[in-house]
Each structure stands twice: as C-alpha cells, then as structure tokens.
Length: 151
Image (cartoon, rainbow, N blue to C red):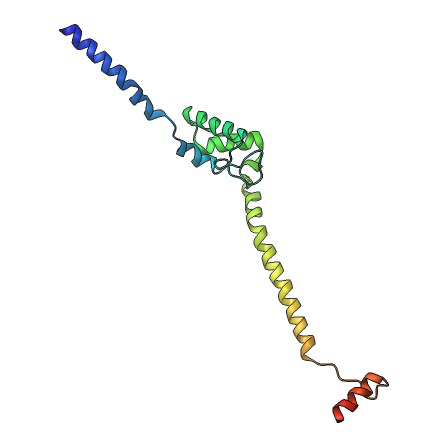
C-alpha cells in the first residue's frame, strides 16, 4: 500500500512537471513586444514583429532565446544595435544624434514656413502698389484701348 502511494505520487509529479516548467516559457507577446521596436534587416521600414521573411523569423527566435536566458529588453536591443547598427532601431541610440534626428524635421518645417511667409508678404507688397500707366505710349494696342474706352 505504501509503495502504491509513492508510485502514485511520483506519477502525479511527472505529470505536473511540464505545467510547472511552462512558467519560464517566453510567450509570443513578450517576443513581439521587443520585435516591434526593431526593424527588419531585409525589408525597408517594416517592424520585425510584422515581417514574414526568414531573417525576421530567425531574429524573433533569437529574441526568444535571449529572453529565456534571462536578458532584459534593453540588453537585447543593445545587442542587436551592437551587431547590426542603429538601422535596426530606426532612431540612433546616441542621445545627441537622437535629439538631432527628432528636432531636424521641425526645424525644416519652421524654416519652410518663414520662407513661405516672406515670399507671400513680398508678393503682396508688390501687388498692392500698382505701376503707373505709361501715358503717350506709341503703341497700336494702347491706341486701340483708348478708342475702346472712349466708346
């Protein structure tokens, strides 16, 4: 009876072992949370989580393995940047370059608005002061216009 109890206990533990091991399994959501911050090495401007190429499958599998080994999200991203460069994250990791890349489009917008406003204001000032007509012009068109205006 005692042997049967121990045998049953061991059998239950063997059945429960895979369930306990699943706590350490990395989910697809965890992998995709990091993959969406990285870009495909083959395609242009496609996040790693949305790309279906074999290279992206390999990278996602690598992210899974790194997560299972205990690496943090930041460590994984830094590892990819170290190996493949800033192009994998879309924005530079260096704080100065990142600030420059984020500010530059706004500077171009402001500069374009200033140039456009200057152009419009100059154009208005020229059109608001009409040129004086030349009197006594010896042109057949001017003579015809005078005849048409006089009736």
